[in-house]
Length: 234
Image (cartoon, rainbow, N blue to C red; front, side, top):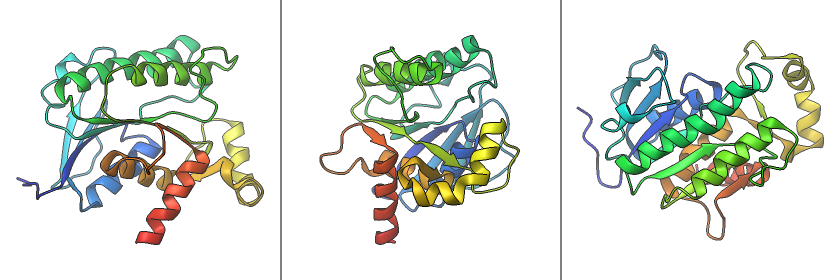
């Protein structure tokens, strides 16, 4: 059994089979401040680690059965999501809004002192007026999380997330952006973030909290600044 040392924390990661969630899990397992990481998802990860506990959960529309697994946790990193165009609009909303709110409800009840870090996206619109479904739904989820009563909520809004490792891109736009990434990064550095850097920032804010004066929303430039501070401290 992995016995936590003083000041170590326990994290829950949802969506660890995805790109950012996968990097977040790796970062958490290697982090000296993490006593244990519980990965909750719909399919097996295919890895083992002394710090890792894996919980399979088929339907995030009802997370009541996760109450015991979520008890006694210090923070949750919610990375579950879907690409625009990959699923019908109703399914995009269900995954982005309904599943987020349902998981947050059970986590808040099971670990009332736990922090919540949410993988949102650039342009998220809590007002609900955006014409872009992705921005509207991410904004709705953000608004619900801020009202949920968590002691600490962090809403990370990355712009283009560079995959780092080769993968099958979900659509033509992502294939084009990957090809243009070197020039895009040089010309518009605050509009890109490597997936592993984003994951490092997400784990860090879940463990330590945001910088003094930083609110709950971390835009892409804020995420990059946090990564620079982590690199400088290494």
